[in-house]
Image (cartoon, rainbow, N blue to C red; front, side, top):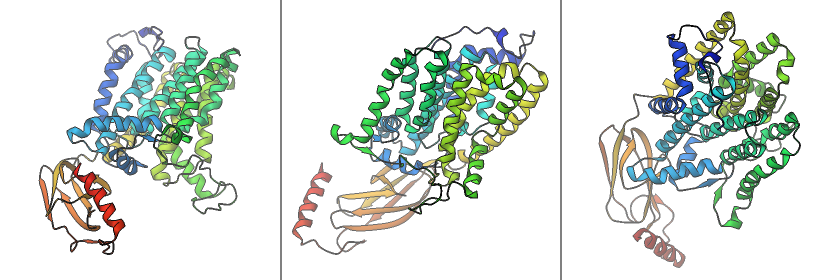
Amino acid sequence: MRRNHLHINSFSDQTNNTNDPWVSTGRFISQQPILVSCAFGILFWIYRSQFYSGDGDQLTRMVEAGHVLVKTELASQAIFQAVYQILKHFHWDGFSVINLVSCIAGAFSIWVLIIFNRDFIKINPLWTLALFSSCGLFLFCTGHTEYYTMFLIMLFYYGYAGVGYLRGGISSRHAALAFSGAAWMHLGIMFALPSLLLLPLLKKQWKDYVGIGVGLLLTVAAFFFKDHSEVLGIDVLGLSPSSNFIPFFEDPSESRFYLMFQLGHYIDYIYAWTIRSWIFWPVILWCVALFGLRSLWRPERLFLLTYTLCFTFFTFVWHPNLGINQDWDLFAIESAPCLLLVMTYLPPLLSSQFRRITLAIPLIASSLIIYSQIMTEAHFEHRAYGSVNIDLSEAVPNQINLNGHLKKLHNPAVREGAYECRIRDLRNMKAHIFYLHVAPESETRFPFLVGPDQGTGAPDNRNDANYQTWRDHVENEYAQ
């Protein structure tokens, strides 16, 4: 990243007292962004969520099943899988792996945000971190069981690259590569394509469209992997629909919660807006009222405004399949570019003590609300592990799952709690269903009789030739 040297006297709220803790802390954050980000990563891990969010339960099953690529989140799923393949040897489950990756991605997001502030905004970064902690994006970083924290890094970095291009320190190809990197994390970035195409126009450098075209080749590759994976012999799973717009006047599938102009749509939209960043848009409107509409015409603000409005459009027309309480995180991505836009207004806004106090009050209130949600999801009283060992009366090919997650006969680390469990006897096509409670730091042992006379399952067809062939195949795989 391009570095513009920051002097402490560039802070808009700088005082002559260099021993002021507020000023000295801001100086330290600006000078040591990596160290500060690592500290945040540790904090995120301490407060890591113990709940599945969005498609988190399904993602965990996919990770534990060994699936490497998902159509709309190619690199994100690959990262989850790579980390799982390493840590499963140390008895980590898919849930803990996703927790870890999200916390590390959150630390990287903080780093990019600090660098953006240091290079382009030049205010005390404590204000930037306060804005970040006041919105739903902060929840992404505390072990969120979805892809969005890795996407958040690239959302911030694309904003950094775009502003850097407009200021002359970054090439158009670099900005397009940042956009393409975001596309590999999550194809939702395609809604923001107009903001990328606007960059050379804002700078009046028409030849830079060539660099953008080169950088977008990586995005084209992502779509090729998504749509033509069978040509490459690669298994790419589908997770979410690539087109899920809210119908205007009728829904032939009858699968949507509402139509575009129904009241439920607007209620959900307001809910998603309040949980992602209820402060940001009012602050932008406040700044426009203070400094005039022409303050938006600065190239970097026009870029960030377009970037934000692209996702504003997305949040208004996209349907929350899981319900807004679960899908709010998908809609929260709008607040990433919106935060960068707010930051560009902070230097003049914070030049007045009255305005600093006026901004600080809702920031503190919102941050406390976010912290209460973090504490709820951290669930400190229920995050221990126990062991589960299942003893079968004979060695048969089997499949075991706890709450739908594939497990082995002997599991040294299972999160405490109650489970619905199934053992499938693949030799005799029989199933055993039972329930167990895993206690912290304890062993739970279950003996089971298996065979043709135990369990429930398919009709007895053991004399069928096709069944015998299938049984031989399963036993050979089990033996290996």
